[in-house]
Amino acid sequence: MTTILAVDLASRLSAGFMRGVRTTYEFDSWESTPIAFAEEIAGAASLADLIVIEDVPYGISNQKMVKPVLRLQGIIIAELARESALERTVFLNPSTWQRALGVFGKDKGGTHDLAVSLGYTSRDYVDVYGASLDGLKGKERSKVRAQLKKLSTDYDDAFLIEHWARKNYAGIRDLVGVQEPSI
Image (cartoon, rainbow, N blue to C red; front, top):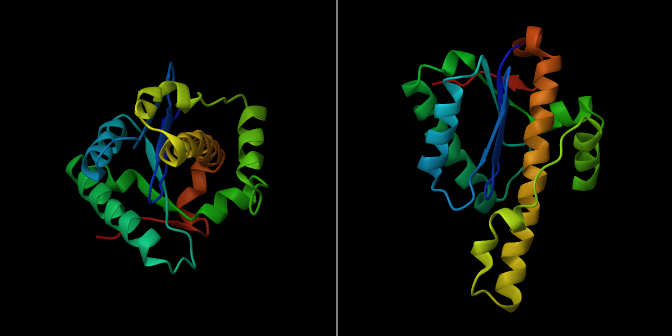
């Protein structure tokens, strides 16, 4: 079985999913620095035949959203280069996998439902990282709970990216919306 590492990359929270012969490996950026998260990706990449990282979508002009994720991409590329994994890495436009799987333009419930129908269920990250809520009250507690709920959808997306990549593995580098890292 081909081992594919898929990363749903975003400006705030990101998640990774890798399925191998005997196990799956999942990780996220919750309470992680960009460098530590990039190191986590690079460590997992050492076991992967293909690394698929969701790219920044076309058309985003909000610098507050774009700059952090672009910086993170640069850190990830540097870490993957240190692991000699760049030749196994591609960046994937979100609309490419979303259109192919029929979830483009749908709310996060659509990706969740598709992931569940394909046999994947993400954990409840409010339970997993519940200690992050200790001592928080009111709006601040609600904000953190919302971020943790969003993290579940990031895992759904990472799973779906891996699913899409597995279906397209043979010709993935030739598909529109797929780019190799250029350094």
